[in-house]
Structure formats: structure tokens, C-alpha cells
Image (cartoon, rainbow, N blue to C red; front, side, top):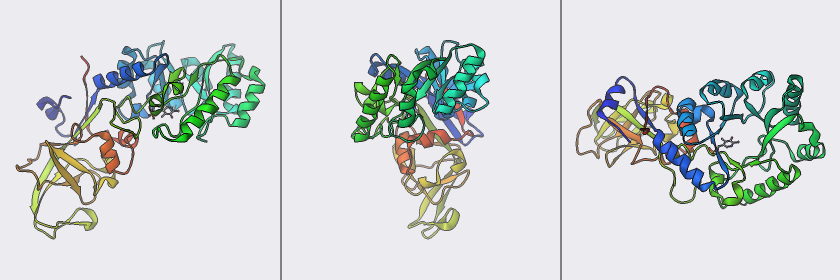
Length: 374
Ligand SMILES: *Cc1c(COP(=O)(O)O)cnc(C)c1O
């Protein structure tokens, strides 16, 4: 990944630079595509593509062959639709909000219908317009989050004419524990999904997220929905991460100092220097998406040297112990927060959270550079 002098210059005045490697993104897409066999890959680009930019991420995925895109909100779909070619399908995972029916129908946006009420409103819209509107119907197979309950599922199966005005492209469900491959809940959800599929014969099934793509061929079904694996996060907790890293983060040093043993460092004075120490203050904090919980476990890197985060993380800055460095770290140099020495998943683990949460809150104040495409 390029971290050129030019990029550092462009980042001047910001707290740091975030690189988003679109070549790694499309490599990840191709790796999942190869893994998916007959199943298609739909890209989940909700929450602005996990904070990486839904428009910027969707274009190379489309070029790589992706034709199915998922967002969470209707509002996200309205914003993204004009940037997608007409033959790209765009789905709204969180359902059909009341009042959005006409706009969804006008723009060819496909709602995931999560309740009998949503089904009723979308069929009503279809009848009024004299159009067979596309839809996905979601069933809850063991997460208790979204989708038809078992009773609602049986009721719909008993009266399939209810969805006759619709063009049901897929039935779908979502795995609760796909990131833990050994979890028995995965196989149980698959059994339920198959039972539901048997009730609606001939309708393709969408089931697997990133983790689900690594649970074996039974889980692939017809359309997969990876998010985090495309963005380089580990799809599960077992073994080395097979995905290429997509995100890099380098933050600027703004001041260094040497403090004597006994000095209290940062807000609340929660950290006391145990010996004479050299410190660097860097220009990113919790307002940039570096959680306060990164202290005291997290670190930045300078070359191969780990620089522990010490004291509380401030809104716009944090302090590093740079005593281990054999050289100075002048203001204007950059340290690595996410990169070859420290993965996104490591940073997330140090903060006591998951890669998803780090990505979706990574700051808008960083200079952003999309790299890796010819
Ligand atoms: C977010 C989401 C996904 C993508 O999950 P990843 O674990 O990021 O692959 C897929 N399906 C649904 C319903 C989701 O909400």
C-alpha cells in the first residue's frame, strides 16, 4: 500500500491519512466469488460501506462483477441508487419504512420485507401501481432481530397468494453466530432455513454473511451477503485472516517531550510515569473513532517498534510512550495505527470491540485516499 511523501503532504493539516485499497477490496471480492461456487456474491455497503464510502466502494465492486448491493436504510438506498448502474439490484435490509413505498417503487429499490405489515404495504403499493414489485422476504431463523416469526411464516406459507402481487426475488435469513464456526447455532439456523425454503419452493435463498461463506457449501445457498470480509476484516475467529487488508491509518505526531518519573500523564492523571519517559502526542482521538477503551492496551507503531498508548485518550489527541525508539520522532512524522504491523482486528481487540465498530466510526477528519486501482 502506498504511503508516499505526496500523501503525507496532502494529509498536511489533517490528523492523519486513511488509505482505502480498492485493489485489495476487489481481490477480496474475487476470493469470495471463487469460494461461493454457484452462489452469487452481494456486497453489503450499509453504513456508508462500513465507513469506507458506499459510492467509492460500489463502483469497483460493480466492475469486478457484483450486481447485488445491500444497505440498511431506505435513505441510504436513495443516496446510493443514482450512483449504481441500472442493472445493479439495491436492497434495503432494515425493511420498508412507512412513507417510503412510492420512492422505493419509483427508483427500483428492493425492500427486505420483515413483517406481515410490510408485506401488506408493499403488495398494496404493487396493486395500486399495477406493477409486480420486486421484494425479498426475511424470516427469523434464530436471531430474534428482523424477519417473520415462525407463526407468521406458517401463516404466509398457508396463504401464498398474499405475495402473488410481488416478484419475490429471494427469501432470506441472517446468521447470529457465523463468526464462530464451531457454534451449534449455525447448523440449527440452516435446518430452519431449509424448512422455510421448502415452504416456498422455487424461490432462491440468501443466507450467508462473511462468516457464513466460511461455514461450508451448505450455507452458500443462492446469494451471499458479505460485508466485513470485503473490507479486510476477519470473517471468523478461527485461524489466520484470509482476506487482504483494505484499510490503513497513519496519524501525525504533533509534539514530543521527555518527562521525569512520577509525572501524571493525560486526563484524570490515571497514568504515572514509572521512570523517565519520552512521549509523543499524536493528532487523533476518540472524535476520530479511536475508542477511549484503547487505553491502556493499544499501541501505534513506528517501523517495527511498538509504541504503547498511555493515559486517557482525548477527543483530538492521545499520548504514546516512545521511549523504546532509538531515534527522535519529530512533529510531522506519522505513526501507524492500522497497517502491516497492526491489523484492523488487532486494534479492535485492543479496544475490546470488533473490526466492524472500528471501521464504521473511523473519523471523517482524516485525509482519505483511495488507492490500489490501476
Ligand atoms: C450487516 C449484514 C450483513 C453483512 O455481515 P458481515 O458479517 O459484515 O459479512 C449481511 N446480512 C445482514 C442481514 C446484515 O445485517
